[in-house]
Length: 310
Image (cartoon, rainbow, N blue to C red; front, side):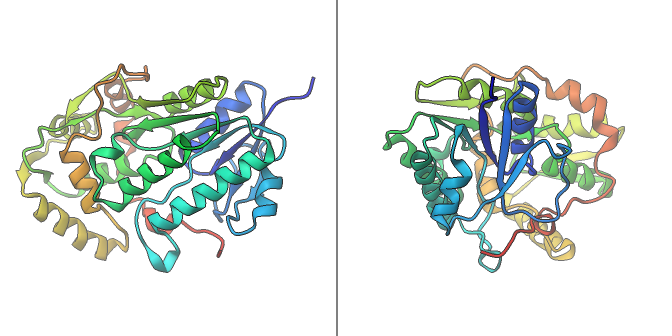
């Protein structure tokens, strides 16, 4: 019996990697569409690789031909015109991808969005996420929109690693405002499990994907420090000071450490949900086991993002 073909955008990245692993564990044939260069192949050649070229519709359709489900993890974190990162471009690219999937006969689209995109309409990152969700909601596609909060686990962990790096480097850690806003991290393997489960269904849904634990942000940072064996003074600071510090640190590191939209989203509680948690893996247990592994070097997100020219 032939194995079902499932397509994952960005399987050499973070969330896409664990969706692909989950699909392989279930015995499916997996293909990835990617324009990233210089990344390792964690699948030992088991995943078929096609180029992700949004400007070549015919090639895009053929790369999706025969697939049962498309798992879309494609997005851009920030606007960076020199690198062709732009939220408006990402919306249009998503539309082209979905159109190609429909023409190729893909039966289901599982799309990774972000928690509470409608609560931050003035920021292009979230506005773009809303626009992509609208494309799916106004279409005839069978789809599941997953809205994860903040991811942890699974190796890459850029956000957690770089917080840990700052905890190691500085005796004082400033949180934006009072730090009482909630954060509800979810393990990337839980997100992958939910994504593959939704790939088997056909009902159109939009669901939050969160972990089983919810923390105040300042307690989340304190838990990380404790798990790393560090004693750090965690103090409140005006958000603008935190952003300026991140900006200056980014100049030194040649990276974009934190964006104003990310700070605002965090303070508005967008990294938590009132829905029933779908994740089962606990951040407190995971960080207690792995805390000593993080923060020994800074992980440069901007330098890691290398793509073929459009």
